Amino acid sequence: MGTFVVNDGNSHKFWQISKDTTRKMIVTNWGKVGGKARTKEEPYTDEAKADINIKKQIEKKRLRGYKPDGTKPATPVKAPTPVKPATPVKAPTPVKPATPVKPATPVKRANPVKPATPVKTQKRKRCPKGTRKNAQGDCVPVGEKRDKVKPSTPVKAPTPVKPATPVKAPTPVKPATPVKTQKRKRCPKGTRKNAQGDCVPVGEKQEKQEKKLTKNASPVREPSTKNNDEYKAVYDVIENGVMLAHTYKDPKSGKLKNPVKGFPAAPKGWYASEKFDGYRAIWDGKDFRSRTGKIFEAPNWFKEWLPPGVALDGELFMGRECFEKCGIFRKKVADDKEWRSANVTYQIFDMPSMKVPFEERVAAIKRLVSRQCALKISGECPLRVTEQKKVETEEEVFKMFDTLVEKGAEGVMLRCPGSPYDGKRSAHLLKVKPFFDAECKIVGYKPGTGKYTGKLGAFQCETVKEPKTKFFISGMTDEVRDNYKKSHPLGTIVTYTYVGVNESGVPRHPNYLRKRETE
Image 1: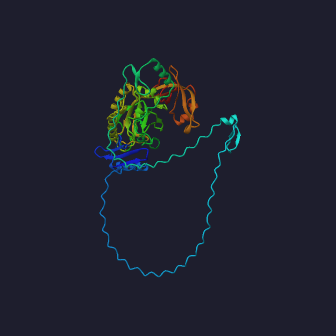
Image 2: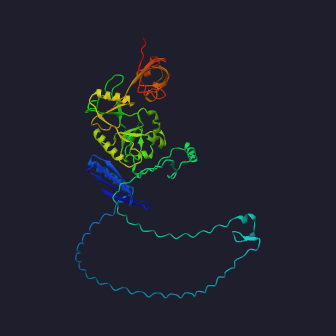
Image 3: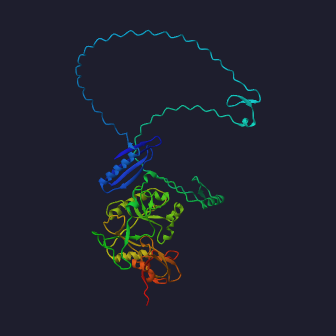
């Protein structure tokens, strides 16, 4: 579509955008003029929307000082139009005779100037011994303190300003060359890398010093090799929302969730995938964000695998039954070693900014991950495409569910065919999770907040079986919340549902089911 350059004296950069209609890609090249260019490709489905997107990007670059490249061939100069014959000039009107000028008044002679008297130069006054000149030029006795005062340094004359060098015309932009990434240098056995990146022999003293230095030091972020200007957030989680799931089957009533009008009921023709037990994370084109908009800090080497300016929905995942270790995602500074040793992956299952049916979004994810993982970056590509399996019956769903849960998975997710991405809790997305039930004894009450102010917020319970564990359960009806002291006094045994137990023995997501009836 066009090439633009900017030259502000400190840097000389170019920016180029075009549309590849065969591959349905918007291709952007940028970098320093005469240097290696960087490339970004953005998939699109609608030609008109792609043109609007390109125009918006061009307008943003113009506002930042980019101008169209002036190296294009000049347009041919049109031949000059023939000059019309001049109109004949009329004869001038006769000029009236000028009025006679009065003779000038004679100027008086100036008085003769007296010759200037020569200025007498005074001899430099010298002070006698034992005295010196003060600031007023008088001779005063020399004192010890005054002798120590250093004379002021003479002010240097200002250096003449050099004339400004003429600005050279921008050199023609070379076609973008693919960036070659260097392979990570590995040190041979018996050597290690020092602070400068060189391989040096391993010594006991050096290792001990390094351990002392790094013991209390906070993890250092790796420098990024990508242009940070290209990493811009393109999806606002707070404004646009995140797609959340309803429960496929209510655990209390057993009723199935009704489908959205115009779409088939689950599970016939729906897509089933594993429900990952990790941290839900939206890649907004620049950072990983939680569904509440909080940033999950990730190492630079991990983020370099992600496409800039493209929104993705997925899960930061460390493996099945590893939820307790996922606390590394909440750290304010990402620990590079922890992320590498934990083999963190990003399981991608949707693209929030694409306004196309689910099947087309999945196809776009596959193309994007294939392209990103082909980049020559050190280490293994952490991007994964979530496998979607089409199911027809509930029997297939629960067979898949049992297989995955036995392997340590959290459950199964169902996605409606042909559905859009809804930035809210939607019936287009359903979760099938393992629900267990158990009994506990009420040992306390937690007051409610918000809409439950003045009512019961949660029951504090203790497990009936050993070992004894205390926790809170919620999910009661408004009737129970209003009359809990009468209907559920302390010591009452209740049944609750949960989806698993953490390492400390506390049930995960416990919900009130019913009160045990006395015989």
